[in-house]
Image (tube, rainbow, N blue to C red; front, side, top):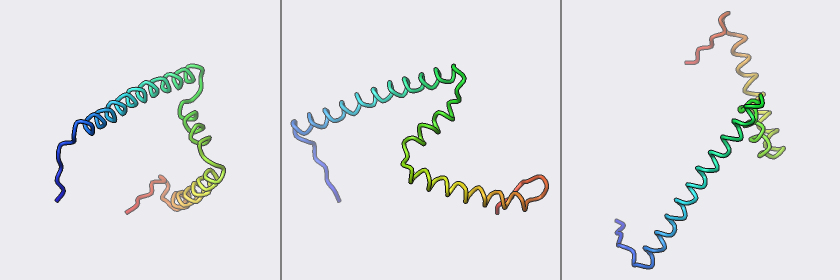
Length: 97
């Protein structure tokens, strides 16, 4: 069983410092998230699609190798779904048990 004891004054101050730094960073993160949302809204105001912009940002973060692997998996999954849909009844509803 682990036992805990109260930290000494120096350790308590260090702990408080870490907590305050994290709290400040969380506030900054919140402000940045608000700024990012505003840019998305501004782009949407010019007629651009937010979802597509998000996909482009995600795409740019990936390496060519990651993109290629993802594209290949997407194609494999798409072909699997299409084969099920083509074999499905006329209403194209596929029930998976």
